[in-house]
Amino acid sequence: MSMAFCFSPSSYSSPSFSKFNPGCPFASSPSTPFLHLRPILSPQGPTTASLIHHRKQLPKSVLFSTGGWDNGINGIGSSGGGGGGDSGNDRGDDQGNAGDKNRLDALLVLAEAGRSLESVPQDLAAAIQAGRIPASVVSRFLKLEKSALFRWLLQFGGFKERLLADDLFLAKVGMECGVGIFTKTAAEYDRRRENFFNELEIVFADVVMAILADFMLVYLPAPTVPLRPPLAISAGPIAKFFHNCPDNAFQVALAGTPYSLLQRIGAIVRNGAKLFAVGTGSSLVGTAVTNALINAKKAVNKSSEVEVENVPILSTSVAYGVYMAVSSNLRYQVLAGIVEQRILEPLLHQHKLILGAICFAVRTGNTYLGSLLWVDYARWIGIQKAHD
Image (cartoon, rainbow, N blue to C red):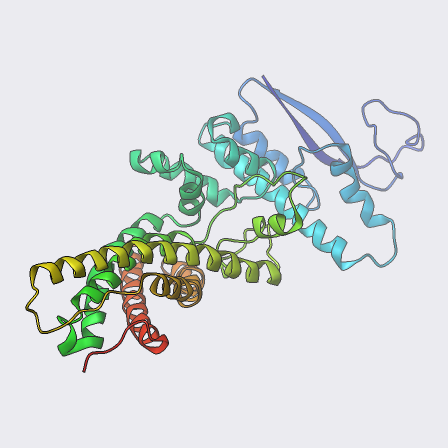
Protein backbone atom coordinates (compact mmCIF):
# COMPACT_ATOMS: atom_id res chain seq x y z
CA MET A 1 0.00 0.00 0.00
CA SER A 2 1.29 3.45 -0.86
CA MET A 3 0.32 6.83 0.52
CA ALA A 4 0.27 10.01 -1.53
CA PHE A 5 -0.37 13.45 -0.07
CA CYS A 6 -2.19 15.93 -2.22
CA PHE A 7 -2.24 19.65 -1.55
CA SER A 8 -5.44 21.39 -2.64
CA PRO A 9 -6.44 25.04 -2.20
CA SER A 10 -9.56 25.99 -0.33
CA SER A 11 -10.89 28.92 1.65
CA TYR A 12 -12.69 29.34 4.90
CA SER A 13 -14.93 32.22 5.84
CA SER A 14 -16.01 31.26 9.33
CA PRO A 15 -15.28 33.87 11.99
CA SER A 16 -13.96 31.10 14.20
CA PHE A 17 -11.35 30.15 11.59
CA SER A 18 -8.46 31.10 13.84
CA LYS A 19 -9.46 28.43 16.29
CA PHE A 20 -7.73 25.10 16.11
CA ASN A 21 -9.26 22.75 13.61
CA PRO A 22 -7.69 19.27 13.40
CA GLY A 23 -8.90 18.82 9.84
CA CYS A 24 -7.38 22.08 8.65
CA PRO A 25 -4.13 22.69 10.50
CA PHE A 26 -2.97 25.62 8.40
CA ALA A 27 -4.70 28.97 8.52
CA SER A 28 -3.92 32.54 7.72
CA SER A 29 -6.98 34.73 7.36
CA PRO A 30 -10.68 34.30 6.59
CA SER A 31 -10.20 35.25 2.95
CA THR A 32 -6.77 33.80 2.26
CA PRO A 33 -6.55 30.43 0.51
CA PHE A 34 -4.81 27.76 2.48
CA LEU A 35 -3.47 24.31 1.77
CA HIS A 36 -5.33 21.23 2.84
CA LEU A 37 -3.30 18.04 3.18
CA ARG A 38 -5.31 14.98 2.25
CA PRO A 39 -3.81 11.46 2.21
CA ILE A 40 -4.75 9.18 -0.68
CA LEU A 41 -4.35 5.48 0.04
CA SER A 42 -4.01 3.04 -2.82
CA PRO A 43 -2.50 -0.43 -2.97
CA GLN A 44 -1.00 0.33 -6.39
CA GLY A 45 -0.11 3.99 -5.93
CA PRO A 46 -2.02 6.99 -7.32
CA THR A 47 -4.21 6.26 -10.31
CA THR A 48 -4.18 8.16 -13.57
CA ALA A 49 -7.59 9.65 -12.90
CA SER A 50 -6.62 10.90 -9.44
CA LEU A 51 -3.39 12.44 -10.73
CA ILE A 52 -5.24 14.29 -13.48
CA HIS A 53 -7.96 15.46 -11.07
CA HIS A 54 -5.57 16.73 -8.42
CA ARG A 55 -3.30 18.35 -10.97
CA LYS A 56 -6.23 20.48 -12.12
CA GLN A 57 -7.04 21.40 -8.51
CA LEU A 58 -3.55 22.45 -7.51
CA PRO A 59 -2.42 26.08 -7.64
CA LYS A 60 0.30 26.96 -10.12
CA SER A 61 2.70 27.81 -7.32
CA VAL A 62 2.60 24.29 -5.83
CA LEU A 63 1.69 21.60 -8.35
CA PHE A 64 3.01 18.71 -6.32
CA SER A 65 5.26 18.25 -3.35
CA THR A 66 6.73 15.21 -1.65
CA GLY A 67 9.11 17.17 0.51
CA GLY A 68 8.87 18.19 4.14
CA TRP A 69 6.42 20.60 5.72
CA ASP A 70 8.65 23.60 5.12
CA ASN A 71 9.03 22.89 1.43
CA GLY A 72 5.29 22.59 0.95
CA ILE A 73 4.27 25.66 2.95
CA ASN A 74 7.08 28.18 2.81
CA GLY A 75 6.98 28.30 -0.98
CA ILE A 76 3.60 30.05 -0.70
CA GLY A 77 4.04 31.84 2.58
CA SER A 78 7.22 33.56 1.44
CA SER A 79 5.36 35.50 -1.25
CA GLY A 80 3.34 37.44 1.27
CA GLY A 81 6.13 38.53 3.56
CA GLY A 82 8.43 41.22 2.25
CA GLY A 83 7.90 44.18 0.05
CA GLY A 84 9.75 43.95 -3.24
CA GLY A 85 11.14 40.42 -3.37
CA ASP A 86 14.44 39.55 -4.95
CA SER A 87 15.35 38.12 -8.32
CA GLY A 88 17.29 35.27 -6.73
CA ASN A 89 14.22 34.18 -4.78
CA ASP A 90 12.07 34.54 -7.89
CA ARG A 91 14.43 32.28 -9.84
CA GLY A 92 14.35 29.78 -7.01
CA ASP A 93 10.55 29.82 -6.98
CA ASP A 94 10.41 29.37 -10.76
CA GLN A 95 12.79 26.42 -10.59
CA GLY A 96 10.79 24.91 -7.75
CA ASN A 97 7.54 25.27 -9.67
CA ALA A 98 9.11 23.70 -12.76
CA GLY A 99 10.35 20.83 -10.62
CA ASP A 100 6.90 20.26 -9.15
CA LYS A 101 5.37 20.20 -12.62
CA ASN A 102 8.05 17.80 -13.87
CA ARG A 103 7.39 15.46 -10.97
CA LEU A 104 3.64 15.34 -11.46
CA ASP A 105 3.86 14.93 -15.25
CA ALA A 106 6.44 12.15 -14.94
CA LEU A 107 4.32 10.30 -12.36
CA LEU A 108 1.34 10.67 -14.65
CA VAL A 109 3.25 9.03 -17.51
CA LEU A 110 4.28 6.15 -15.24
CA ALA A 111 0.70 5.73 -14.03
CA GLU A 112 -0.63 5.63 -17.59
CA ALA A 113 1.93 2.94 -18.43
CA GLY A 114 0.99 0.94 -15.32
CA ARG A 115 4.46 1.40 -13.85
CA SER A 116 5.67 2.56 -10.44
CA LEU A 117 8.82 4.35 -9.32
CA GLU A 118 10.15 1.07 -7.96
CA SER A 119 10.08 -0.45 -11.47
CA VAL A 120 12.54 2.06 -12.97
CA PRO A 121 16.29 2.40 -12.22
CA GLN A 122 17.15 4.09 -8.94
CA ASP A 123 18.91 7.08 -10.50
CA LEU A 124 15.95 7.73 -12.79
CA ALA A 125 13.48 7.35 -9.90
CA ALA A 126 15.51 9.79 -7.79
CA ALA A 127 15.52 12.32 -10.65
CA ILE A 128 11.74 11.96 -11.01
CA GLN A 129 11.19 12.49 -7.29
CA ALA A 130 13.46 15.53 -7.35
CA GLY A 131 11.57 16.98 -10.33
CA ARG A 132 14.73 17.18 -12.44
CA ILE A 133 13.40 15.52 -15.60
CA PRO A 134 10.24 16.19 -17.63
CA ALA A 135 7.65 13.62 -18.67
CA SER A 136 9.12 13.38 -22.19
CA VAL A 137 12.27 11.78 -20.77
CA VAL A 138 10.23 9.17 -18.91
CA SER A 139 8.26 8.44 -22.08
CA ARG A 140 11.50 7.98 -24.02
CA PHE A 141 12.84 5.60 -21.35
CA LEU A 142 9.71 3.45 -21.53
CA LYS A 143 9.98 3.37 -25.32
CA LEU A 144 13.68 2.48 -25.38
CA GLU A 145 13.17 -0.21 -22.78
CA LYS A 146 11.10 -2.23 -25.25
CA SER A 147 14.23 -2.97 -27.31
CA ALA A 148 16.56 -5.68 -26.00
CA LEU A 149 19.67 -3.81 -27.18
CA PHE A 150 18.65 -0.49 -25.67
CA ARG A 151 17.47 -2.20 -22.47
CA TRP A 152 20.98 -3.63 -22.10
CA LEU A 153 22.65 -0.27 -22.83
CA LEU A 154 20.37 1.50 -20.34
CA GLN A 155 22.12 -0.47 -17.59
CA PHE A 156 25.19 1.75 -18.08
CA GLY A 157 24.87 5.24 -16.62
CA GLY A 158 26.71 7.08 -19.40
CA PHE A 159 24.72 5.45 -22.18
CA LYS A 160 21.48 5.94 -20.27
CA GLU A 161 22.03 9.69 -19.87
CA ARG A 162 22.83 10.08 -23.57
CA LEU A 163 20.09 7.83 -24.95
CA LEU A 164 17.47 9.62 -22.85
CA ALA A 165 18.64 12.94 -24.28
CA ASP A 166 18.89 11.67 -27.86
CA ASP A 167 17.37 8.41 -29.07
CA LEU A 168 19.60 8.63 -32.19
CA PHE A 169 22.78 8.67 -30.12
CA LEU A 170 23.71 5.06 -30.93
CA ALA A 171 23.09 5.65 -34.64
CA LYS A 172 25.38 8.68 -34.51
CA VAL A 173 28.14 6.57 -32.95
CA GLY A 174 27.77 4.10 -35.81
CA MET A 175 27.82 6.92 -38.36
CA GLU A 176 30.96 8.45 -36.91
CA CYS A 177 32.94 5.23 -36.63
CA GLY A 178 31.62 3.82 -39.90
CA VAL A 179 32.51 6.75 -42.13
CA GLY A 180 35.57 7.84 -40.17
CA ILE A 181 38.06 5.56 -41.87
CA PHE A 182 36.86 6.47 -45.37
CA THR A 183 36.57 10.23 -44.92
CA LYS A 184 39.89 10.50 -43.12
CA THR A 185 41.68 8.45 -45.76
CA ALA A 186 40.13 10.60 -48.50
CA ALA A 187 41.18 13.79 -46.69
CA GLU A 188 44.72 12.47 -46.31
CA TYR A 189 44.86 11.76 -50.04
CA ASP A 190 43.45 15.19 -50.90
CA ARG A 191 46.18 16.90 -48.88
CA ARG A 192 49.09 14.66 -49.93
CA ARG A 193 48.14 13.74 -53.53
CA GLU A 194 51.23 12.32 -55.29
CA ASN A 195 53.00 11.85 -51.94
CA PHE A 196 50.17 9.73 -50.53
CA PHE A 197 51.92 6.39 -51.00
CA ASN A 198 55.31 7.79 -50.00
CA GLU A 199 53.74 8.92 -46.72
CA LEU A 200 51.56 5.84 -46.28
CA GLU A 201 52.94 5.09 -42.81
CA ILE A 202 51.96 8.57 -41.63
CA VAL A 203 48.54 8.17 -43.24
CA PHE A 204 48.10 4.90 -41.40
CA ALA A 205 48.99 6.53 -38.09
CA ASP A 206 46.46 9.29 -38.69
CA VAL A 207 43.68 6.83 -39.51
CA VAL A 208 44.44 4.62 -36.49
CA MET A 209 44.38 7.64 -34.19
CA ALA A 210 41.11 8.76 -35.72
CA ILE A 211 39.31 5.43 -35.35
CA LEU A 212 40.37 5.07 -31.71
CA ALA A 213 39.18 8.61 -30.96
CA ASP A 214 35.97 8.69 -33.04
CA PHE A 215 33.86 6.98 -30.41
CA MET A 216 34.94 9.35 -27.65
CA LEU A 217 34.37 12.35 -29.91
CA VAL A 218 30.71 11.37 -30.15
CA TYR A 219 30.37 10.13 -26.57
CA LEU A 220 31.90 12.94 -24.51
CA PRO A 221 30.29 16.06 -26.08
CA ALA A 222 26.86 14.43 -26.52
CA PRO A 223 23.98 16.17 -24.67
CA THR A 224 22.78 14.25 -21.63
CA VAL A 225 19.93 14.01 -19.16
CA PRO A 226 21.68 14.53 -15.79
CA LEU A 227 20.99 11.54 -13.54
CA ARG A 228 24.20 11.59 -11.51
CA PRO A 229 23.69 11.84 -7.76
CA PRO A 230 25.20 14.87 -5.99
CA LEU A 231 28.75 14.61 -4.73
CA ALA A 232 29.55 14.07 -1.09
CA ILE A 233 29.60 17.12 1.17
CA SER A 234 33.34 16.62 1.71
CA ALA A 235 34.05 17.10 -2.03
CA GLY A 236 36.00 20.20 -2.95
CA PRO A 237 34.44 23.25 -4.64
CA ILE A 238 36.21 22.60 -7.96
CA ALA A 239 34.97 19.02 -8.09
CA LYS A 240 31.43 20.15 -7.27
CA PHE A 241 31.56 22.86 -9.94
CA PHE A 242 32.60 20.53 -12.76
CA HIS A 243 30.20 17.85 -11.51
CA ASN A 244 27.28 20.26 -12.04
CA CYS A 245 28.42 21.37 -15.51
CA PRO A 246 26.53 19.99 -18.53
CA ASP A 247 28.21 17.47 -20.81
CA ASN A 248 27.58 19.72 -23.80
CA ALA A 249 28.11 23.46 -23.41
CA PHE A 250 25.25 24.28 -25.80
CA GLN A 251 22.70 21.62 -24.86
CA VAL A 252 19.12 22.55 -24.06
CA ALA A 253 18.59 22.76 -20.30
CA LEU A 254 15.67 20.78 -18.89
CA ALA A 255 12.98 22.69 -17.03
CA GLY A 256 14.04 23.14 -13.42
CA THR A 257 17.75 22.50 -14.09
CA PRO A 258 19.20 25.62 -15.74
CA TYR A 259 22.91 26.10 -16.42
CA SER A 260 24.81 29.31 -15.88
CA LEU A 261 27.22 30.76 -18.45
CA LEU A 262 30.14 29.79 -16.21
CA GLN A 263 28.91 26.18 -16.06
CA ARG A 264 28.65 26.04 -19.85
CA ILE A 265 32.22 27.33 -20.16
CA GLY A 266 33.22 24.71 -17.60
CA ALA A 267 31.75 22.02 -19.88
CA ILE A 268 34.15 23.06 -22.64
CA VAL A 269 37.12 23.00 -20.25
CA ARG A 270 36.19 19.64 -18.71
CA ASN A 271 35.58 17.93 -22.07
CA GLY A 272 38.75 19.49 -23.42
CA ALA A 273 40.78 17.89 -20.63
CA LYS A 274 39.16 14.50 -21.28
CA LEU A 275 39.70 14.71 -25.04
CA PHE A 276 43.33 15.72 -24.49
CA ALA A 277 43.84 12.48 -22.56
CA VAL A 278 41.98 10.46 -25.21
CA GLY A 279 43.90 12.06 -28.08
CA THR A 280 47.27 11.64 -26.43
CA GLY A 281 46.58 8.01 -25.53
CA SER A 282 45.24 7.04 -28.94
CA SER A 283 48.17 8.77 -30.64
CA LEU A 284 50.65 6.85 -28.50
CA VAL A 285 49.11 3.60 -29.73
CA GLY A 286 48.89 4.76 -33.36
CA THR A 287 52.42 6.10 -33.64
CA ALA A 288 53.90 3.09 -31.84
CA VAL A 289 52.23 0.75 -34.34
CA THR A 290 53.36 2.96 -37.24
CA ASN A 291 56.98 2.97 -36.10
CA ALA A 292 56.88 -0.80 -35.77
CA LEU A 293 55.66 -1.06 -39.38
CA ILE A 294 58.35 1.37 -40.60
CA ASN A 295 61.10 -0.60 -38.90
CA ALA A 296 59.73 -3.84 -40.31
CA LYS A 297 59.68 -2.29 -43.80
CA LYS A 298 63.30 -1.15 -43.44
CA ALA A 299 64.38 -4.62 -42.36
CA VAL A 300 62.66 -6.30 -45.32
CA ASN A 301 63.50 -3.75 -48.04
CA LYS A 302 67.01 -2.54 -47.24
CA SER A 303 67.68 -1.48 -50.81
CA SER A 304 64.86 1.04 -50.89
CA GLU A 305 65.99 4.47 -52.10
CA VAL A 306 63.32 6.28 -50.14
CA GLU A 307 64.27 6.57 -46.49
CA VAL A 308 61.19 6.68 -44.27
CA GLU A 309 61.75 8.28 -40.89
CA ASN A 310 60.11 7.10 -37.71
CA VAL A 311 57.19 9.15 -36.46
CA PRO A 312 58.12 11.08 -33.26
CA ILE A 313 55.95 9.43 -30.63
CA LEU A 314 55.87 11.95 -27.76
CA SER A 315 55.56 15.16 -29.78
CA THR A 316 52.95 13.67 -32.11
CA SER A 317 50.89 12.33 -29.21
CA VAL A 318 50.87 15.62 -27.31
CA ALA A 319 50.12 17.56 -30.48
CA TYR A 320 47.17 15.31 -31.28
CA GLY A 321 45.90 15.65 -27.72
CA VAL A 322 45.98 19.45 -28.02
CA TYR A 323 44.24 19.26 -31.40
CA MET A 324 41.39 17.16 -29.98
CA ALA A 325 41.06 19.33 -26.87
CA VAL A 326 40.67 22.49 -28.97
CA SER A 327 39.53 21.85 -32.55
CA SER A 328 37.64 18.57 -32.13
CA ASN A 329 36.14 19.61 -28.81
CA LEU A 330 34.65 22.85 -30.14
CA ARG A 331 33.48 21.36 -33.46
CA TYR A 332 31.66 18.43 -31.85
CA GLN A 333 30.16 20.56 -29.08
CA VAL A 334 28.69 22.92 -31.69
CA LEU A 335 27.58 20.02 -33.90
CA ALA A 336 25.77 18.08 -31.14
CA GLY A 337 24.47 20.98 -29.06
CA ILE A 338 23.53 23.59 -31.69
CA VAL A 339 23.25 22.04 -35.16
CA GLU A 340 21.58 18.78 -34.12
CA GLN A 341 19.75 19.45 -30.84
CA ARG A 342 18.70 23.08 -31.34
CA ILE A 343 18.20 23.25 -35.13
CA LEU A 344 17.65 19.86 -36.79
CA GLU A 345 15.75 17.97 -34.07
CA PRO A 346 13.05 20.63 -33.46
CA LEU A 347 12.41 20.80 -37.22
CA LEU A 348 12.50 17.07 -37.98
CA HIS A 349 11.65 15.35 -34.68
CA GLN A 350 8.69 13.56 -36.32
CA HIS A 351 10.74 12.46 -39.34
CA LYS A 352 13.49 10.27 -37.88
CA LEU A 353 14.71 8.89 -41.20
CA ILE A 354 15.21 12.33 -42.70
CA LEU A 355 16.79 13.55 -39.46
CA GLY A 356 19.18 10.59 -39.42
CA ALA A 357 20.15 11.14 -43.07
CA ILE A 358 20.90 14.84 -42.52
CA CYS A 359 22.87 14.08 -39.35
CA PHE A 360 24.85 11.52 -41.35
CA ALA A 361 25.69 14.10 -44.02
CA VAL A 362 26.62 16.79 -41.48
CA ARG A 363 28.81 14.44 -39.43
CA THR A 364 30.52 13.14 -42.55
CA GLY A 365 31.40 16.68 -43.57
CA ASN A 366 32.61 17.48 -40.06
CA THR A 367 34.84 14.39 -39.99
CA TYR A 368 36.35 15.25 -43.37
CA LEU A 369 36.96 18.84 -42.27
CA GLY A 370 38.67 17.60 -39.11
CA SER A 371 41.05 15.45 -41.15
CA LEU A 372 42.02 18.39 -43.33
CA LEU A 373 42.61 20.58 -40.30
CA TRP A 374 44.77 17.92 -38.64
CA VAL A 375 47.11 17.59 -41.63
CA ASP A 376 47.53 21.36 -41.84
CA TYR A 377 48.04 21.64 -38.09
CA ALA A 378 50.59 18.79 -38.00
CA ARG A 379 52.60 20.39 -40.79
CA TRP A 380 52.31 23.84 -39.26
CA ILE A 381 53.84 22.77 -35.93
CA GLY A 382 56.47 20.66 -37.71
CA ILE A 383 55.66 17.12 -36.58
CA GLN A 384 54.93 16.13 -40.20
CA LYS A 385 56.79 17.33 -43.26
CA ALA A 386 55.61 17.32 -46.85
CA HIS A 387 57.83 15.42 -49.30
CA ASP A 388 59.13 17.37 -52.27
